[in-house]
Structures are given as C-alpha cells and as structure tokens.
Length: 461
Image (cartoon, rainbow, N blue to C red; front, side):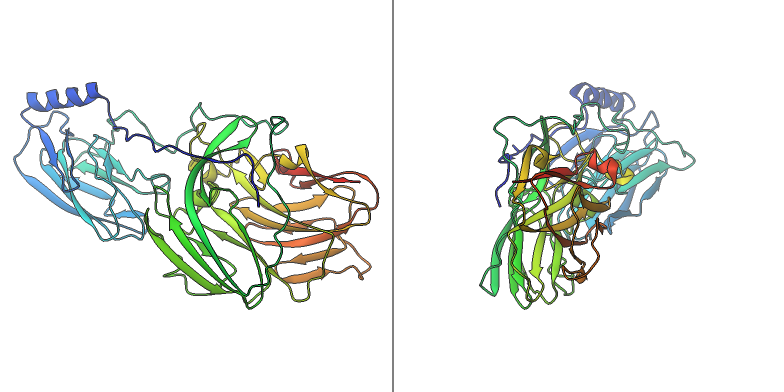
C-alpha cells in the first residue's frame, strides 16, 4: 500500500548531557571544598564527576549494592546508605530489553544489554537521590529507584529536570482536525491487498524510526514497521504459512506479536536489540482481520507510537465485491514537534487525535470512491491502544457484518446493522450498497473521537 507523505528517516540526535557545564563545575568545586570528589571510572567506558554529598563529611567507607533490572523494575528500588559513605552500584540487566540507570546527580550507565553487568560509582551520599531508566517510556512505566541516607526521608531532585510524567511540554503542537492538507497531499491508499495465490508468505519487516506528518503541519517521530504507520497489510487464507523476518534498524529494542498466529510467545515475540534480526513463523488457522504490533514493554508506548499493522485471513468462500477497503483506527498522543509520542498522555487516555490509517481526517480531503449499485466491503481493525471504535457510514445500512471471526449478518437476512462496534485489538468487516450518488461520511460514532479526526467520506458517483 502507498502512503503519504513519504516518511523521512529521523536523524540520530547527539547525546545530551544531563547537566550543564556550570552545574558540573559547581559540583566539582563543592566536592573539593568538603574534600570529596566522586569520580566514576566506569566499566561502560566513561568517566564522570558528580557528588551527592550535600555538605556531609565523607566517612571513607564504601557501601556496595547489587541492583538488577527485571520486569521493568529495579530490584531493590530503594537503597539506604549511611550518610557520608561512598555508594557503588553493581547494575545487572536480567530483563528481556535494554536498560540504563541515570542518577539525578548526573552520573549514569550506558545502555546495558541483557545479561550484562556494569559498575556505577554514585559518589558520597549525603542526601536523597532519585534514579531512573532513560530509555523512552521506561521511567513513566515505573523504572525508578531512590537512594537515601539513614534518617533522611527527604527526596531532592538536584538536576532541576523534574518528573518526566508531568504536564506535557508547551512545545507540543496542536492538531486542528478541520485543517486542510497541502494541495500535494496524497492519502494512504486504503484499498485492500488482493489475496495472494501462494500459500507461503515471506516478508521482511524492518523497524524504522521516521518523522512523518500525522496532521496538516504536525510531525511526529514514529516507531514503525517498514517506515509506515500502520505497517504493511498482509493477506492470506486459512492454512497459509507466514514467515516474517523482523530486522531492528531502530535505536531501541523491539519485538513483534502476530495475533493471527497461535503459538507460545516466549521466543518468537521476544524483543531484539538494534542490529539484530528474528524469524517469526506461524500458520494461519482461523479467519478474520488480525492485529500485529510491537511486543516490547511498555507496549502502550510502542503501539501508541505507531508500531501496529493488520493481517487479513479470508473466511472460506469469501465472495468477490466491487470495492474492498481497509481502515485501521488508532490514536495519536503528541510529544514535542518531531519527537516521539507522550507516554504520560497515553497512560492518562488523553489522545490528541483519533485517526484512520495514521493521518487525521485524510479521507475527508481525499475521499474513498464507489459507484451506485457497487457492493463495497470495508475491513476495520481497531489498533487502539485505548479507545473503542463504533464504525458507521452516514446514509448507509450494513447488510453484511463479519465481526471477530463470526458472521453476524448476510445480505439474505431481513435486518441490517448501523454500526460495527469493536474494542482495541479487534476487527471485522461490513458491506453496503450505496443507493444513490452523493457524499456519504463515515465516522467513529464515539463522536468526540470523530471530531478528533476519525472520519472520512465515501464519494459515490
């Protein structure tokens, strides 16, 4: 399927220090005045100066604590140190994805792979110091720890950066769901792919980080499969074999989960590091439109930032129709312009937009087409990650409804449906025959979401 506009690969940003030069010099001067210089000679290749002494005299003693990362948490997540002791953290990553450990004083580890251990010199501890994982979404998901001293329950953030789960930045762009795209805008082709004759389907899915326009004048850095959000739409029949090679060209660990396959997730859905690849093989045993998505925690962040797509497995003896479209509903949670989505908004269920096929109201400006008397089939998948969908076409009845693997209505039945209601990760299709020429709006009938951008038009001639 074609997409618009063409995503542009995001440049790799330079690594930014946690504190300014002046702050670093002030900390060194303070440490010198009290006779304490906390120097980290790290096994991850860096040397960094910092102090959490806060005026306390150094005891000359050292406290060493083993900290592991597992299950998106630090164990332990609270470390108590006698005031004036130097703290050494032996940090081991036992999780299935990469992590680091950043302290509010500015010292940090590099990103640590699975099974690796690094040594972090936290310096002399004289006050409460907060720590967290700086990989996208990990801090907001609960990867934090606190270092405190005996008898000192007070928590102080010495960086001035504050809590990253706070109110989103004022730099976040604003979406106008009524805005008109540029004249050269091309909507994503919603035409469903034809069912291949082959019974074995091989495809490479590359994880790519791209900056794309998601609404007129609004760009976001999306995590994608093959550079688009939604990713490619796959199609086959019951009994077909799918062999998917996932290649991680991104900067974070990612995985993939195909709902169309039924198999133990331990190996095929595991996250892989940048530069790695994984082969995911499954047999389609049941019909329907199935979601696939990134399987890496926090999944809310990875799905909400663009990592999803669809697999259509045709019901047996599926009749031919005149037009066949695919609409995937999802939500946008904007970060700053050109940056990744805001996990805090996702957790609060506060979307900036709800869209079909990745762009706000694109089919209002570039309508889908049909002719009077044509039978039109619309596959609908709700990728979420949070909002329900109530798909409705104004002025049309659905004489055919297929929902979550079951026929609800067929053309020979006397009744009809007005909506296809689907929760996140579910889907189906509806069919209609437009009675006369005109413009037929389609919406998510959760009206607040229609007004957020989940709308379009069928232009019938």
